[in-house]
Length: 285
Image (cartoon, rainbow, N blue to C red):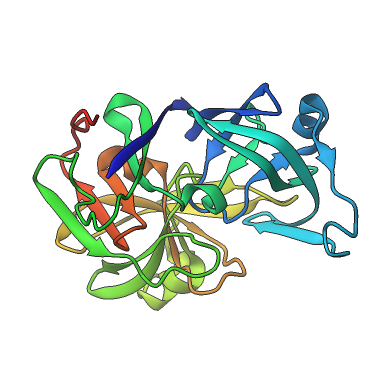
């Protein structure tokens, strides 16, 4: 492994903000492993002076971005230069939509994140990106024991990391979603586990939102036991949300989970590595 970049994390309302530079102008993006395309707000595009792509450049297609709150139309924009923690690239194409991401300018997503192994070092308030060298197969080199490893499910075109989680002895497909402030399970999966949502009157009720114009009702329920590989949690609060259109995802492991467990997402070895209890990463050269 080679250390590629350290990004300072600024927690804000549960989101994880990282600094970037687009066309030599500073911006802050939500570090979001649950989104598969880097997305900017139209307000940020105007402030940064990014160029809008023509219909021909964008293959003549209208794009749509989707989330818990529904769908929103999007357009293509181009940044001549991109700098992420000292990593510099040129002529990157992103999507932009009329969506507010206060106080950030958008989402830094797996189209860029998945090029690296990702150390979510919350004890030090940083994300560290590593690039494998040659035949290096030691993705946990900078985490101290005890460690718990579980294979990632097959990585699809969207590059979003997924694992199998057992709740009460039944398996669900969970996505590691740093863009979600709270861990969540979708209603259909919760009912498959035997929960009757209408019988959870004593649990905390609220709403949740994201990309899209609407909010959805949520119920926070304590699930037990929840097992990921060889690591088991006896009391894990999880929001129950209305179903959304997705391929196989039934659950989101959000930023609240990643603060409890030091997570390393190894795209190079298709492994999720967890350190519990969490401690700062070893210093890497």
